[in-house]
Length: 189
Image (cartoon, rainbow, N blue to C red):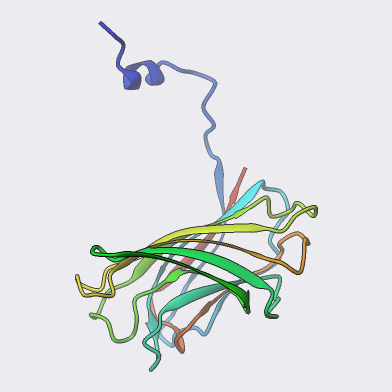
């Protein structure tokens, strides 16, 4: 009889890392909406950073992408790759010379009321000044089973700087993030 992996793993002591994530800051959007989300004065005491978010956008724009900028840089020096699936088809695309890294999509203003997109963004080795910062994200939206329900995987980087990340800005394609959208920044040990 072979051992069951879960039972074996439950007997391990002293080898598992606990408390690997520490909350740095959380922003929950109020009634008036918010045109962007900024995390500033990020401490340099972690190995990686992670942003977990839940969002919806307002405005006439039916696009609902979320773009990330590093250290306030808005010049066209960002590159990203995207894989998208909507339940019936998959696609891939890439973009260079962008003013931000596309890291996902929220629910749009024209989607079913109460629908929010959710995602996780990882910023790897954010204090290493010898390389560009790698960003990866996994995100999904459910527009009540319409053709805009998607899952995304993004990766990207800023090509003009190897500086440590001290600020992260998240910018919607629409007018603003709406009430109850929430963004939480974590440090990963």
